[in-house]
Image 1 (cartoon, rainbow, N blue to C red):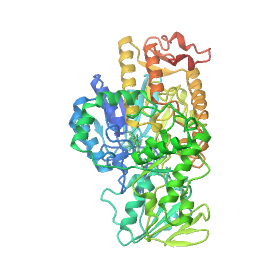
Image 2 (image 1 turned 90 degrees about the vertical axis):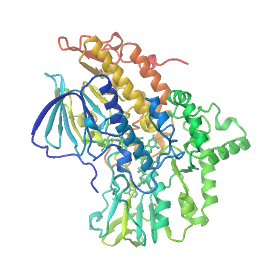
Image 3 (image 1 turned 30 degrees about the vertical axis):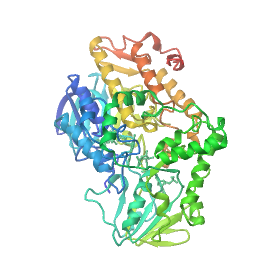
Image 4 (image 1 turned 120 degrees about the vertical axis):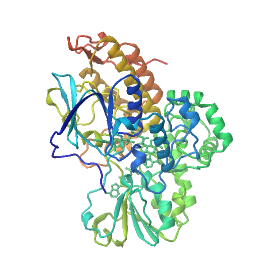
Length: 572
Ligand code: FAD
Ligand code: N01
């Protein structure tokens, strides 16, 4: 496993050059940022630590990996020629197909010529005198750039738990987020999968078909919804292509960034029979939309419990052994407080004779030994271990870069108690640094493609505005940042999200601050707010000019006054 780690020792500088923009990452965010900013005439370079484009879809090659947002939505909308040319073969595309799509995008827009692969950005410090970022790579290149775009991904730093004896295991071990490109053949092997999140739930059914024996080590049972994946027929493809304009409009202004009309009825406003029928309809339809059957499932515990109980009954109906079924049934937290999984045959897999569920709540892992995994009541001899143990989500990749802002303040210190941003776009004291679809914005609570495009478009317009007005820096005002931090908390606390111990809360990484990191107000509301801020001259930001730093503060952003986010929302 070669998962990304923070570099403790920095390389010596061997090469220096200048660019207008440095972008970190060549996943969907970095690629679109490169295309957009190059289109504005900026001289941009992207650094990517992987050997090619794709980000998530370059690294996560485990069996069964695919998207759980419909392919037609989980794709770029910025070019109609692109969306008309590309033919998705399945409702939920596989990792190889998505990677093929990313490559097609990179080729179509000739992006590779400005991407340097196999290169990790290790440090970025703001030079206050030059008003530029100094970006250092692990190859010893020091790039001076006006703008620094952090497109490092929310789920790009794997988490392998520090279990006693982990390195003594005799066989191979894998992390789902760093899967060998040549694939892994488990035929005839005894395999342990640690974890039961989305990655595990997608891979377990396929590993079970291949392995001689599979042990699934489960700490917290998850809610998983059937995908009901299917091929896209030629007729459906024509329909999708004819309807793209409307589809994208819907996605941009609803809560989740997908082609769905948000529900307007609450689960407790209908009769039990109607509720059951509606859940059944969504269950049969397949996919994540089940979690949006009623408008109050994410905010009302009693309403949520009706959906949770429906799923529990389904699990009990699928898994033949009642004891195993009971251990697979999620309890004690609301449905969708942790990201629900979407599966093909997950619960059915536990009806197979070669699959054993190991309940870590009853008997935790005590160590990994030479020959396998040892729990408090048994030793499981295995030939291979798959860590489907998730990611140091959202902040992991940002903090793996030593980012230093005004006054030499490391971002790691500024964010000691948790991420601090305004709109999830930038942070006070870090001029001209932009984050793409990460902490403080809808990002992981949405179709990421919708959110990535929205952020990159906003950044592009902002830079154009700066150039038109002679500004060379934009910076978040501390009062706006503080207001946004409080606003994010208020939004999250009005939902059931904080009731799940999830990576959304940083709860999966020991020592990480516990707070809900994404924006829980929905994609449409967030987009409208960003549009408002743009239209009103960027309240909450201040612009600087080479001759007069901070001379162009927006009147709406007086540093002394508390910053009022609510006043900026468009009222219904
Ligand atoms: P990434 O794709 O993570 O790309 C970031 C890139 O930055 C990586 O290639 C990384 O190597 C590089 N990088 C990081 N740090 C550095 C550094 N210091 N120097 C150089 N390079 C660096 N989202 C959805 O909306 N729908 C889905 O169905 C969906 N399915 C998913 C399935 C899996 C298995 C996973 C893990 C995530 C899924 N996601 C999904 C979330 C997914 O991460 C986003 O949809 C999207 O791909 C993110 O794109 P990105 O470019 O922002 O980040
Ligand atoms: O990671 P996870 P993931 N001992 O953090 C367990 C996206 N994604 O890679 O819940 C034992 O969700 C941990 O247990 P617990 C999607 O956004 C999408 O699966 O902490 N177990 C949990 O079961 C998703 O949410 C798709 O008790 C340990 C598991 O490991 C995100 O990526 C597919 C442990 C980790 O689950 C992350 O998903 C894949 C330990 N020490 C990913 N440490 C789609 O379907 C952790 N665990 C589109």
